Length: 376
Image (cartoon, rainbow, N blue to C red; front, side, top):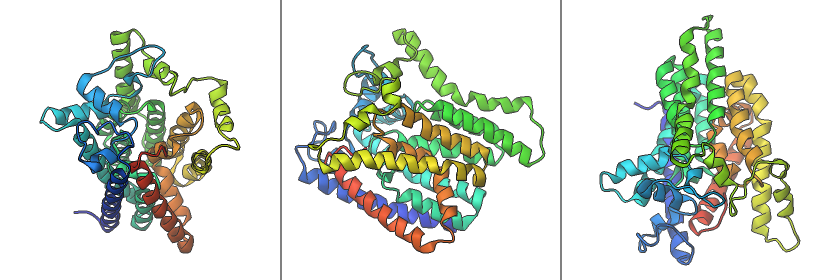
């Protein structure tokens, strides 16, 4: 049976899921010219066309046709295998890959919110957990937890599950979940780093000594390593996912131009549209806000969660040429939502105002996404 905090968050999340789905459907119906990878298979299904946008097509192609790598060109190797493998698993049962991708995202997203609330209860009590769950459920980019065909919902579920099990002392189960998570997105060092530090801290809090079995946390990166080995064997290039991101079209080439965000500054001009300016400023602002919460997270939740959030925010922020996608990536920085909830406990008016603004932005961005606008 769900606790009160989890029930509240689940009910709100279900409401957000329904509203986002309705808005995405209406937006897709009113923008039939907007491209969706699902439009050939589902031309008369605006809900699927609305939820299946942009990189969703890569996941569907991997699930049905596997990987290929073309040096210097955009290639599916940039996308890690856990999510498309899950889609392929449903495909073996006769489920269409686009339908499977949307259903998986929605189910994983709702489960992740419930599990996140339970984890937050362990760390800060039910009241703070409820507030944190609401902040995450109504986060402006939470529509990626309600059906958008991306890997973020699955990744969040696995990462929260790994830390939840670690808090309960179930080390092996935590490591197994984490290993699957590191095969879902290319931020394995953040998760491994966070788990190792948190395990050390967890044992210190209980007056326990470090044992050889605690080194199992290092195996959390096994999914990442296995994918690199696959790329090496299949294409002779273990870092093909990095090189693919550097291809024209994505242009995420490691180097000083990316690290100093030269492309972000170049994006501003007198001819730019308002939506483009808001997108550039919005993603940068939310990244800086997340980084500002890293230290409070370390102080209130522990060094393990501080280390994890610093890495999970810092790695994509450093590798992005213009901060685009950071709103979506920050879903994985789940401890920040609990930290924010704790900071706002004595400021109820500010908390409710933030939730209201966040919910309004969530519905607005879900509508834009469903219409085919590039918002993250």
